[in-house]
Image (cartoon, rainbow over all chains, first blue to last red):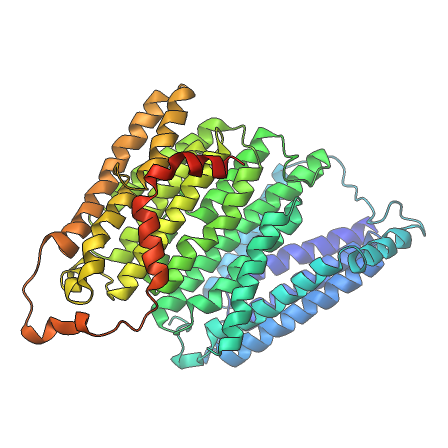
Length: 172
Length: 348
């Protein structure tokens, strides 16, 4: 399980590096999907099965929006892929930096807390309680958050509309 | 933009500020700040001018950065102490990080440089919302954390009054001058917030009234730079005759309302044994006075010649609602005699 967790965390780092290396929006969205999937996989390995499912669905929804917007509104005629020139160089640089930092900081032997109280069957209990709390006591806050997400959707549409005639364009 | 959407967005703007005001939990405060930021963005890009979109993008990046630092500090605090409450934050490091994040959101020097750029890209109405309403939520959080890290806030305050005065000196663009003026006024607020929150509230209220009066005057005479002010007398002579008093009230000259918060803040700082800080703040207010005086000079104290067809606009009825402006100008000019009542009101 430790090996699996480390592999997934490596995926998170690679995905983040792919976003940070500034490729075209399509590939950056791909990097974000990688980060989301690997992160959720890691949470699943740590025992949060329900949490990771919810998180992944929400991330996926966000990714779909980002992807649809980036394709529909700011479509690059000549996208820069991950394997091309500057992107690949930056990505390699970020990965080397992260690896070096990981080497330098020799932590205690890695251990991960499980998401619930224990790694046994009681993990489901905490999650179910959290969900019922979110829908019960936190109902209004949940509605505000959902409303904020809707406004965010509108904002992204409002800022980036107009494709090649709009103010937000790829710089050549 | 459809009026329905506009109303919904304004409602969301209010919702964000209200959430930040009522929350006692860092997560909810963060949600409030984020809703606030998101709701103002469509209002900023309403006319879809590239400059406005640029300003909105800059504003979003800065505010998102500030909110991320705030969330990071809140989560770290919860991790280290197990407390999520805003008023339960006790660690000085944590309060320092929160103060810096809020300073970034408020545009206090040395984290101010986004503000003139963002203001310059917006129309005066949105600028007014940005200069007044958008400051309320971060200020409410700053009032609540009960800062113990006094040198940091005094440094932020003094740097803001200095940069706010200095940066506006060589500007000809009124919106940039107003942005620097906003930085300077918030500097005074932050200077006193840890000694007397009620005085800081008073300073914020006076600034909001004065800023609203200023922005609406400039909106009425349709001026965005000092050259355009020169012919503003033809638009509304009585208003332009009052305008210098409004600007000098912002500068803090005695018989006007703006003198009240500065006077009380200096008194409070002297009581706290911070004479040098008070002196420095007053000296930097002189720098601000210079650009207010220059606006006054171009607007009212000189009467530039104009051709005959450019003179009569004052005969026409203004299309804009003028009653709120009348109230705001009166408030900006003449509330100084009510100082004891104002102090009693904010000390409740």
